Length: 343
Image 1 (cartoon, rainbow, N blue to C red):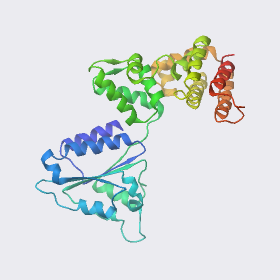
Image 2 (image 1 turned 60 degrees about the vertical axis):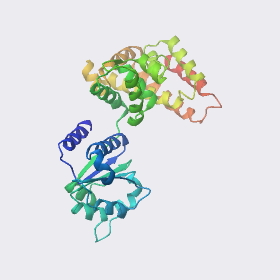
Image 3 (image 1 turned 30 degrees about the vertical axis):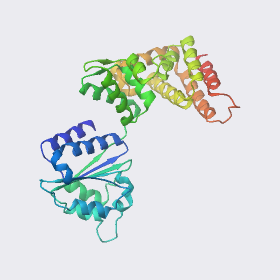
Image 4 (image 1 turned 90 degrees about the vertical axis):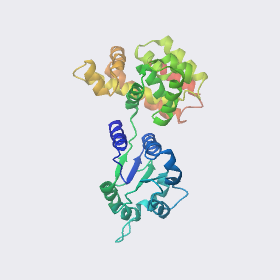
């Protein structure tokens, strides 16, 4: 996906502009990035006053958008029309009369060559089988921004920051993903804060994340997972006690989900015929930096025990949602679970 975005940006830089850009998909980050790049770079500052229009799907109709797109530019080669939150117009965009053409389809067949029309269609996507999709693809460009899986976000953080002159330690990236989830816009905002504080060429460490973003480098699910894998009972209980005292910042449902994923991967690890680092990393879809954790955990937890733990985690997940928990606090549930796992 990054490569496709880079290619689109390079084409725009060269002046190879499309009359329609339909930016769609579950991940809004790249949709915003491409729309902002077009808004900032296609027209000069002098041209933007009369020739750049930003519309919002909830405030306009498709007729309004197309009417604007059919205008001729004033004292410039082209105009730019950007429709943000275009998913709010999805009924109009997707309507397909039996015989007559969809309005957007008709425009896409003969777009105004001096207009760059951009649709920011977030959290949804066009059906590739529809005529409107095919017509836009012929004359314009359709970009689908797909949601990254959690195990891909750490690599994304390191790649993005590497392009800006920074190195990110794997544990620091893991902390950001654990704390912020897979929302790339939210993660990027925190990375920009780090860029303001740390000079270019710096290495972003777990300590830098803790001091500047407020994520504890010692009391988090990553460290709990490591402590459990190493059977470090004292450290694991210390982290659980911290979670118990700060339940809002450390929801049990997240802890269980991450431990479930870890032990599921440990089951896969036990079944691998080859245990070399690259094979394991590829099979588990993790950074090679984390393979050592699975090697250590496999020594402490044979396959039969891992299967039992996965079952325990399933039951704990149900209890964490209030089923059969008998009014136990999340802290007590976690302590009970930890004893069962490490016994």
